Length: 337
Length: 302
Image (cartoon, rainbow over all chains, first blue to last red; front, side, top):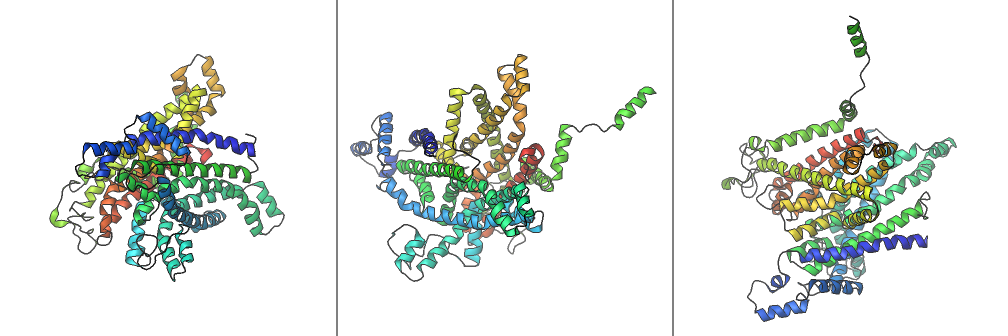
């Protein structure tokens, strides 16, 4: 098992290295000079410009800049934002909890509805419920989520006035120093009355928007996986033994049907990150996705570089974990590979 | 007379259905797929004949009629069926021309990624060794970056435009085609018919393209159909973020982005472009499901 883990982890190393290479050189190709952006439109003396370039290391040969970049990365230095002068790693992890909180609740929403709905649809195959669910799932699957977000804002926030339009909490009423970075927990810790509800209120709509595509995918996957399992011999045997339907479905069928579903959940992480970029932009949710888009506008190379590298690394690590977990919950896959 | 009888006898035996007919029989069993096909055909026709269908030019501004709702809503006029945007441009016309853009992006991404994907996939499968490892590692790298994030990076580097949107989305989708083709080619390569062809002296390109490729087509076609709809969504997302087609091109995603500020006052301007994206994507996905059921029985949805 340990050997398998090591081998699997070693396989991702070249990917990390290539990732550094690509992010570094891609960002250099971006049109627009970061120093000029930082100094603004105002005229600046050539000496001052040269000094800036020197400070940022932009006057050195490009391969040397790359080696420095890798060396710094290995020491946990992901660069310094040209705009805010803040370390990219610090900035990223200050914002990441917001994205994590959003993604977590999106997945809770998707799993909490998608899996039961998929199971029921499989059990009542061909029924109205099944057909409606499959229709809805196709719609969810095809949904441009940026539009879905705007639509929900129009209906739920504007028309019905049920939820706020943007942000993570009502900043006029509540203010407290972030402790964990997770707004719900921080709100509870702050002991301010109503803060938790305000945070929850802000979270609902974005989580639904981000969770819609995974929900549709999960419902569909669970349904077909469940249908496959229900026709297996061991399920028939369990039925024939006279086990209660609840035991047959809950213990025998569901456990096996969920194996491929777990993989799907894990593999959603990449698309969740992509979805987070859009969702955060729509709801002005202060997470890494919105920050990434803003970095492009500000031509903040190091932030963009570090951000993409960090997001991709997280996705690679999660996929690796899912792979290993999959091996351990599915006895059919042995680690001897 | 005997010949006639023989002919009659031949006709009496039902001819085995041709591949196209068998395909259609299987495809048309799925009512959703046929519905999707019909819907998509309409959208395609509208897009092709946009000049004749659209009442106005997509960039003509009727300043005195800005932000009108559709005609069935109070304040709307039949002069502009689906209303107008903030600059007084006819929404219906913009949507119609937008169909052209979205479908073009979807098709272009599909064609280019199939061409490159098939080449790389076949080369990886046939060459093996270092070539295979290098190609597949690069594909792994592309996959490891979340699709939209990678597309954003590429567009940030190349600059936002319609052409660069196509480049970015193609790169994002490439690995699927490469992996698919490589996997199916690897499955075929050791089969007897390929060995037979080899023994008969078939080599190189001919072996790849004429012998092996046709047997890898079914999953490829299915992937291609679903790839078009995903490409449209991805391109619209880029457009929405302001990184896709630039104004005044009537791209659906950027139309949505332009209209965001009117979400309170003029919900129609926001609603319609998104609806156009959704309907198009659904119709392609419905059709794709039918294609999969008909062409690739192994993947058949139960």
